[in-house]
Amino acid sequence: MQYLREYLDPKYSWWLADSRYLISLNEIPPTAENLRILFYCEECDGDEDLPYHVAKLEDIKIDQDGDYNFCCPEYDYDGSYQECVDCSELPEELKDIFESTSFEKVYDDVDEEDEE
Image 1 (spheres, rainbow, N blue to C red):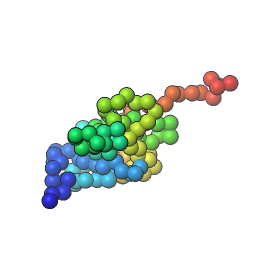
Image 2: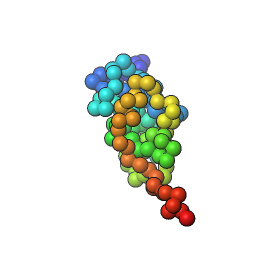
Image 3: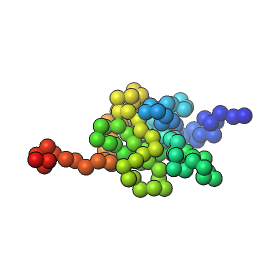
Image 4: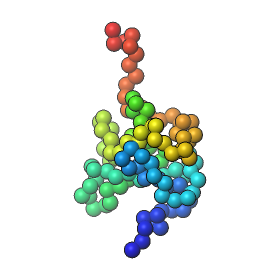
């Protein structure tokens, strides 16, 4: 039996999104270009393929709380996501990368003045 990390392309910095945290899977220093994040997808559970997807930095969405959402690429985002990473739980190695990236928002900007 082999470990998953033995199958991962060593030119990428691999991370696992799991229960609101990101866990490093190899020793490759992350950059905006080489970052890859595995996440489990309930939508694809039971399919012939494994129920995991790989997200690049540009695939990540941000919610109104500033948390990072990972969505199934097969389905349009409808307010749901497959995995979420708490913005306050980002590993130190990823903070600069995430803070310097503009993520697609998955919420509407609403000003308090507009609500009145």
